[in-house]
Image (cartoon, rainbow, N blue to C red; front, side, top):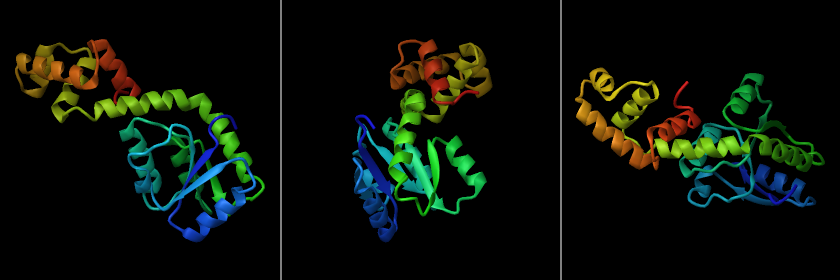
Length: 200
């Protein structure tokens, strides 16, 4: 499995957490069981697979927290009898796999290894997207509007007309936008916006 031998298990059900930990105890994976995503805030590991029970908004919050932290870890979601539409939705939102509970105890470690192998193909782009979104979130609403105009090829005058502000004010917002994003020039800011999936 390479360097990433840790599995972060997020599940509010203590019995299920214990069962999953037990099923992985004979593998070379180190499991860190957590009750909620909140326990990870401020201490995201650099290498790990996140195995999360897909209930309520746990998956969405996990993705949001990773984005805010500017990191991306491969996520494998699981649930009992998941609906096909939900599986598709979660995969499209960034999970590398979705498995049904109860697991096959002998196959879980292999499933996690396969998920890690798949994530190496998309991990780089996910990390860039998470970092880009973190930068975009520093901007005020007006600065985002100016960024959208800049990315659309509009001049300061045209952006000002659309936003009902003066070209000079656009220029100030534009300078602040570049500073907050850590961009040296406009083209870099546009690239960051594209990576953040802000633009179509």
